[in-house]
Image (cartoon, rainbow, N blue to C red; front, side, top):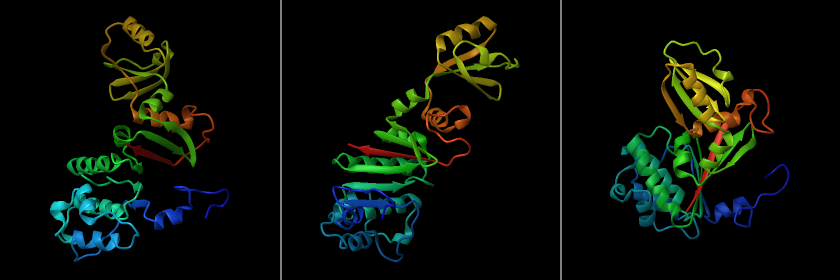
Length: 261
């Protein structure tokens, strides 16, 4: 129950929406019942809902059709994660909530998982997931919400978040040169040094590049748009000013992204 206000999901209280099977959830970790098959587990869970998804359909969406007869305790980590997804689908939900869904998965398992997720979303359903893999949020989410110390500091598409962070990135080889004065170049708002390469965040990349060229013998100049990682740090780092309303001091950051097709 909320401490104040009210919460409605599909026009009713969340607990009723969950009991009706309209919401499914996949936890980051979870141990399935051993010594039963994938099909037996999904069938058991499905029977607890009033209008479940057919077991064969849930298995197909989760990419488990060929593994339906295999025991749960004989699956790989990626296969076990797909079983958790199938369990979340069992009630035939319109909304599915995922907590760090690809944690500890290898590249191939991640790709297979997101292919399954897109198939579910293309049916007109909604996916809400929390993740620390910003590249996954950028690649798969239509909407991204950034939370900093319990407050929403950004809400939009990946492109909108990158624009909100402001500026472009100009990278240049230092080649042993000192970094003094780089922050004073036209348009530059911050300077970061990684090894022998400087990254300048600038609001006027053209002016910054011209000024760098004027220093003489500069090499490896590269101009890029900020990545979602750059935007995330700019939006949550109060030491660089942060967004309006961002609290001072340390922070715990969670990024959540929802995908609707």
